[in-house]
Length: 216
Ligand code: SAM
Image (cartoon, rainbow, N blue to C red; front, side, top):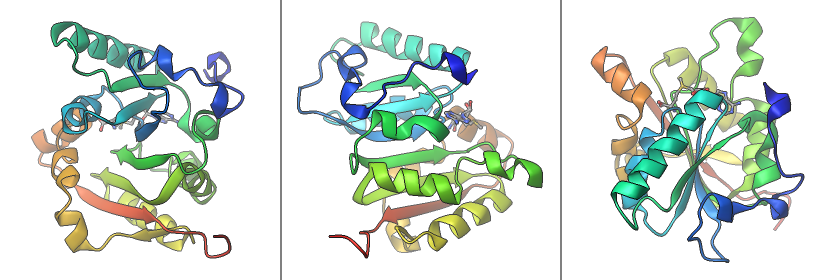
C-alpha cells in the first residue's frame, strides 16, 4: 500500500546515486517508463541510449523487486552495461513531482496501462486531465509521450485527453512511423509479447509537450 512508499519531499532531495552509482553529477534521469511491469522496455532501451538515464516506475512491490534483481543480474553478467537503467517502486499517479524537476524528462512511456474498464473506475486511469498537467510539468518542451494499448476504448480515451489538454499535441502518423522507438515498444515489454501471442490489436499514439502559450 501507498503508506509504505518512501518518497523525497522535493526532487532536489532524491538520491539518484543509489540507483545509478556511476552517474555523473550533472546527469539527470531523462526517460521514464511508467508502470514498467517486468522491465522489458528498460532492458531494450538501455543499449540503444547508453548515455541516457532511464527509469522504470512500478507500484507493485514484487514486480519492482523482480526488475531490480533483473537489472542487477544483467549488470553482473555484462560488466559496464545496463548501468543507465533502474527501477523505482512508487506511485506515479501521486509522486512524480517529488522525483523530477520542472521540464526534466525527454521521453515518457505508458505501455499497456491498466484499462480500468468500468466507468466508476475511470478515475484510476493513469491518463486523466489532472495527471496530464502533472506530466506536462515534469516534461521538457518538445518531449514525447509514447502510449500503446490493446484496448481500443482506452486508446480513444488517451487521445481525447491528450489532444484536449493545452500543453500537448498528437504527433502526426508519419512522424510516429519514422520513430525507431515506436517499432521496439510494440513488442519489447512482457505485456506486449502477451498481446502478440494472443494476436491482439495494438493502438499506438505519441504526443508532444508543447510550450505553454501563456508563459515564455
Ligand atoms: N508496461 C508493462 C508492460 O507493457 O509489460 C506493464 C503493463 S501492466 C498492464 C500495467 C502496470 O502498471 C502494472 O505492472 C501495474 O502494477 C503498474 N501500475 C499501475 N498503476 C501504477 C501507478 N500508479 N504507479 C506505478 N505503476 C503503476
